[in-house]
Image (cartoon, rainbow, N blue to C red):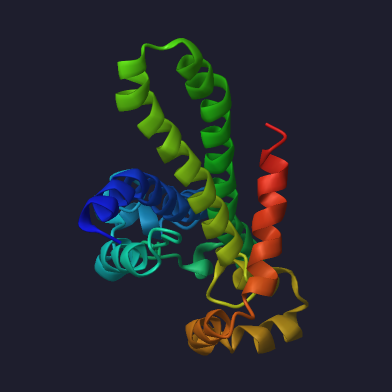
Length: 222
């Protein structure tokens, strides 16, 4: 992938990635605050300022490496996890599950908003806008919105893998009977290792890709 293509793809993907991961983490803290845990608020994480959420590796280095080594076919990233203290919740397991579900739900909402903007604003404008405006303004916006749809759907689907500390794992812990939930939550310290193995062996594809396709089919209704 030549440098000009990298810069072009970076310009298209950077803002959607930043918005996706910022609002993903913000939603966790916002919902937790509403349910009684002000930890994220006290630590300044209830903000749309991406600087508060940026992780050097997950937000900058990893997406750039993926951009280069996948020829722009797959760009993914993550932000610093929002701190949540479940002991502040009235019902810790249930409320932690609700807070966890807020991240993927927000990403799907962002994908819907991107789809609606693309279909009902950008595409109609492209049909009658001057050629210069279409090429320099509307077409780049259309590419960014298409990128936003894919990025948010992939981020939501990936985070729904039912392995803690991913959101899907926390949701499972929240709704299992107490004994089974305690046993299942013990794998959390090894969760990321398990997820990396699942990704490396492509086993995760059997969970993530059907979800991605399902969400994209649902989005096509808009």
